Length: 326
Image (tube, one colour):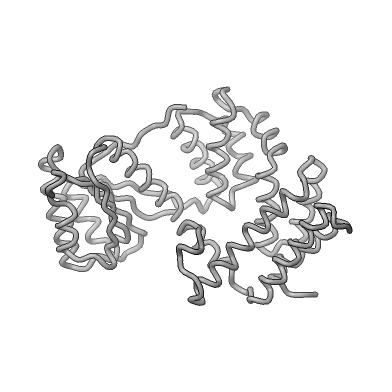
């Protein structure tokens, strides 16, 4: 499967929009830069903590390499001295790109650091805007672009179907687009294929149930769960997805309480941010109750005894109430 590679420039700035898409775009540019310069080091910096000296050291020639690939996060937090150093580098790199290091920056958007973005654009930096994906139309456009990224096409109605099922979870929507490209050779992928795939794919059904439950939509989650069962999705599949998402909530809660480190959470930054939003209203006791209810549903499905479907319904309702008993 052929992927469309991003156009490289001495300085690239990925700014604004959806956080997951921004991180993914930075990753794509970084991988493309590494492929174009396989013998140079990649250096990660954070503008909120880096200073002008550490930046200049990163982009300057070393004993081992004449250049480097520097990935700079939180550009909006760059202090004045660092901002001047970045701008000076941009002017030099644009004038002599073949002998320069490559700089890939991530800016969260908004007014903070906006002047630096303007100055860098005038100096020749390549700026990539990231969609925010708040409207249905923007999500459909995102799906179409995802297929284009893999050198593929999808019927517009099929794209709308994907958005209607997975549109509230951009990460899962992106993953489903990728999976469809891997699983089917037909081009463009038609509505019939997507409809059948969503019906047959346990991951799609399980995530839909989990998302509805965590969003507090208990009745809708139970309806989706029953529909999934009718389509042949196993109870264990849905229990597994719910357990995964609930445990991420518990881990992020422990992280914010200072009990574990980011490394122990084992989740990417976008997933941590999503979990923090979803944690509102949860308590430690509620999370423990939800995980226990899911463990009981898992045990009953594996033959311990009892009604596993009823146990799953009970767990879904409990999660929708943020672990609070009736």
